[in-house]
Image (cartoon, rainbow, N blue to C red; front, side, top):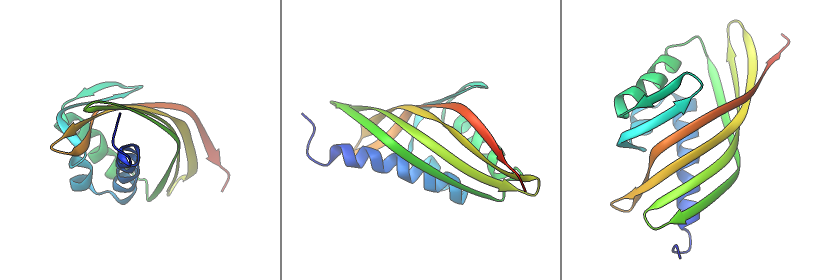
Length: 134
């Protein structure tokens, strides 16, 4: 049985991830990853810390001017030193060309390393993208 508060510590990693992406904080994002992390998206797997971070370097260099993620319906199962997490997300973004919202689900696996929860696998399943009229 996980210690009380362990589920909240895992949820906090998802919230820190969202804030790091929204603020363009690559260093903070890197602090949440194992060396052998895998990011799974529609464009295929990105294996290893540098491949994971390259996806976000590209995003931070894109025309997106503003981004805010909302993470909700977070379900955490802790099994020893691993945590399995599912959650819904919404990301609202703006660029000089307009605004849109992206909706989907995360399916993540985190591992405890020296008492800190880190992403070992992050799966991002984008299910809808809605453009806003300007």
